[in-house]
Amino acid sequence: AEDAARPPADRAPACAQASLTQQKPRSAAGGHLWARARAGMSYRKQSALDLAKLVDKKVMVKLQGGREVTGVLKGYDDILNLVLDETQEAPREGSQGSETRPLGLTVCRGTCVMLVAPADGLEAIANPFVAPEE
Image (cartoon, rainbow, N blue to C red):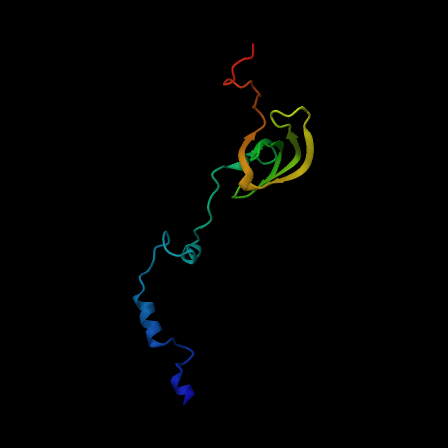
C-alpha cells in the first residue's frame, strides 16, 4: 500500500511538473548566479584597479593609520590584498627618525590599503598648503 502512494522514481509528481513548466526562462544577463555560471558569465566583482601592469615593479602603498610601505608587487587579488617583497616601511610624518625599516616579504590586507602607486616617477615635494615658517 505504501508503494502505491509513492510516485515512480523516474518522474516527478504532477505538482512539480506543473511548476517546472510554468517557470519563465531567465536571460543569461539576469537571474540566479547558477544561471550566469551555466552561461559562462562571471559573477565575481572586478577590481577597480588594474594592478597587472605593476606586478614585479616597485610600488608605494599607503595604509590606514598612516603607515607607508614601498616594495616589489608580487601578487594581488580582487579585494586588494597585496603581496610585497623587499618591503621598506617609511617613517611616519612627525616621527624623529628618518631611516626606513626593512620588513621583507609583506602581505597588505585589502581593507587597510588606501593608495597604491608606482614608485617610479614619484617625487617627494614640500607640502604647498603649509605656511612657510619665518
